[in-house]
Image 1 (tube, rainbow, N blue to C red):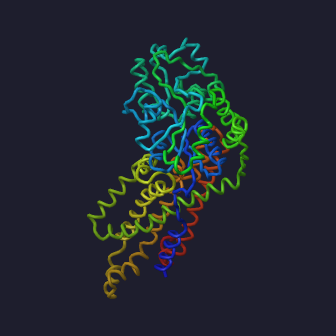
Image 2 (image 1 turned 45 degrees about the horizontal axis):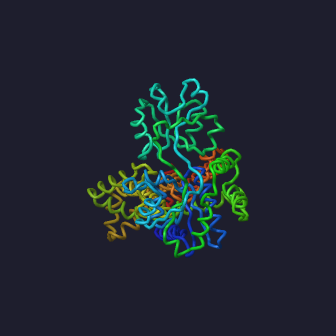
Image 3 (image 1 turned 90 degrees about the vertical axis):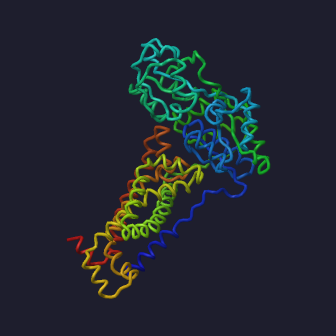
Length: 502
């Protein structure tokens, strides 16, 4: 009976979810980075594409430049907003050319990518300080910072590592500061306001600059290149959806710096949804009326929970199917088992975010790389507990099975696995709980789930949105614990349950 129930459970878990990250024919997928301006522009483009009659999907706040660029190359998205300086410095740093837009287009075309004209505004990098601190230090330009080596600096991950970011800025301006931390862009603003930082990197169209009373330091040595906003798109859109390309062209020159600052402020300061802000802009500027449907909180949370459960069930069921046989093999061949456990342990030490990003070149973005990464994290506890359960069986019990004349396979199914079931189930339970928490990071690569409202809440400094993801995730973890307590009563033989209870 235990064997049948275990097999039924595996089949149930395996069959519950079928996940595909491919788009339907004719669909246009729009990407955006994980900062507000990019999300707003992505929503404008999504609604603009939708106005042509083409189905459009917005895969919002996917991460940084390299994630979006590789997603575009891999056909996971079709278009996303970018900046000319970022293209030159971070995407195509080795490209040759005279620095003109035409030479940039020619280089992009070699990768199958097109670039629109400027959307009408420039959003450059800058350094900023609170106005009060800048007055105290008499700091008006970046070179003034040389006189203050003790300043506490906090920069976004991308600014710290990109070619035109902190490293080249430090060399060009001969800046002596050593207290430099990596912070999320939105968190850095709040740290600056709280006095925990002295300076951070800014985007010049950020709504936080006037809101937090910041001074933008003059780039007196002209470190930062021109960052004109454009759209990058796959050139095959010309054949697939010519009307979409015409629509994208309508955005060229239509968004001023003041427009972008106002749009950012409506989202970040007035707490309006990006889709509503985008709809208002399209109606005012392009006379395109797009009714922005507002999703209620309960349906929204329900959708996130469903996505989250899909990630957990798909990865956990695959891990169960793979890890238990591996654990059996590892228990029977000790040297092989030691190597298997060591390899699984190495995978477990890889930071979850790094593992997710590593999966992108292999599987693209969306659910597939998230499920693959979660699967790898789920394997070790199940393998380890399977080995522990099988190797911990009393030798006298195994000898009794041999005396009864049981074959090796029969002994495994009728004796060893039932006796090891408490340990195996405990390993699955551990994997499931880890899986529920780690799955929140899947939102960074477009997999959705309960990480989506958490990321959005952090970006918008909205505690309510953070709790929309955090509370259901915590409740899911508790429900998983309770579920496995019930499964233990069903799957573990009664005698073993009584022994463990006593």
